[in-house]
Image (tube, rainbow, N blue to C red; front, side, top):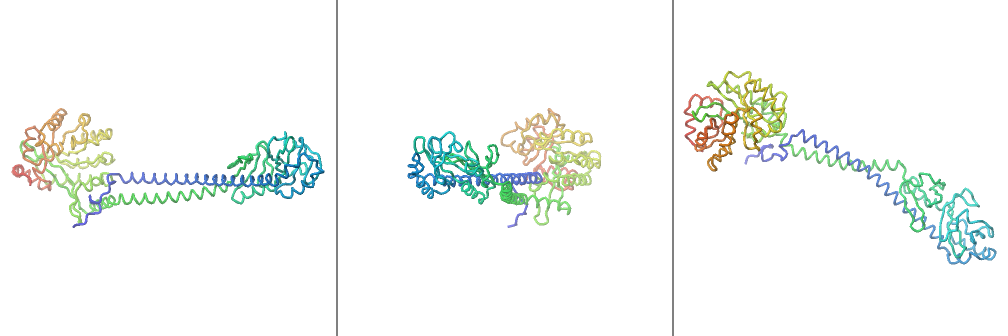
Length: 534
């Protein structure tokens, strides 16, 4: 079994009808957008990761401070609760002894009627509770102050525990213990950790007292103690955010780049057959692998060959004859369209002028939709028109589907070429949602009835073809029936008053010499008409 060409219909990509330049641009835009979006997502993820770490560290710091407060509150709590209200002279020694069992505190004080009257460190003394709490709390409470009467510039956290009516305990917790706990957050990567009590002061991990309006009090992530009411704010340094953004941006970008590479590989795979095909067409044009064949157009009433349609053919040195359906769709969407159209125009006019002598003679050439968008299309057509002898008329066949999409440009091309004697035929009429506006807007000379309607004559009657004939007559156009294959079709078309026809019934496409031979010997046409194609 012969191995199919790499660009054969068996291997053609499902994307082969798309313009590769357009798909490449779309792919590049998508790839660049994906990369940018991925990097942006990575930057956002980097910020999220830092905020998550800030939140986790803040929760850990809250737990650490809560542990300090809970351990102070619970240590020897029963023994301590019995002391407030008793004379200091009686309980001072016991108070000092119990103090040794409590960690984290500078001193423990007995309070009665809003005044401190006994200290674990100093014994009896008299000091208002107001520097610590005002008014006296009715329940267990904490606060943060910038200093105490004993050390004015050393922040402390007073903890007041009421033990009875107008009596209680005041624990003075050293800020050093608090800042040591906060410093663990720095070791975890935080840039600054702040402890604050609502309505009171705040301290950071270095033990510095923060003013009420200091933005550091509310920077980064915040965690609150549901039991004690204090808050811990954790903020990472800007460099940490920068590093995280780079880390996640690169990670996400690398993933997007991998996807882009996969997209690129998919594009290469999808369009590999098309690129191979166009490369082969380019080589074929250079090496003379293309030629033109001609299908005669017969005048039904006389059997005379009045013209021919030029059809491109490709004979590949390795794969043999290649059908135009394999390559023309891709050629029409590429830069090879100009050279291919130019080749057909020049080869067809040269061969037919040289081979035929009967005049007038109509030579039809198919033009692709994108031909009308080429800047040099009109010049290409006029170049061959100027070389034609009198009574050799060039007909350009155009599909109506394209006319409805490119009206302004098409009208300009029509006007220029019609002025120089070029005629136009609307090809495959009735197969692309035809409408009367198409026939009325453009000055066509011929309407070509598609072969599918000709084949229906024997099965479904002639009403549809009659309708097309009536439309063409209304707009003053001649009709050419395509795809005639049987004598019955030939006779029905003749009865309908159709003047021209072409198809295998008359002759298969052949060389320019075969057209000239049919012109010289009308019996060849009559013989073809009387002999069904097998």
